[in-house]
Length: 97
Image (cartoon, rainbow, N blue to C red; front, side, top):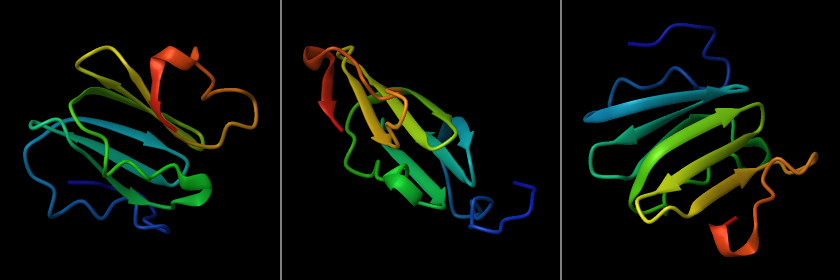
């Protein structure tokens, strides 16, 4: 169940199943599935919803126009706007950007 304006489809989650965690940013919602994959709904402005190829994710975070994922091996995944360096991590920590 989701509530809100759904202006960008960020509340269109009725088909989502096996979700273990949710995160929300500006006009988008992320869902972490039990199998370690990530779903996204809503506005993909700045590419913040480009998470479908992220494997083995154990935690997600969303804020404003950027998305972060933590993989089981400790690497950090990023997507979205980096206008203030919010997606900058040491090069050996990032597997996808």
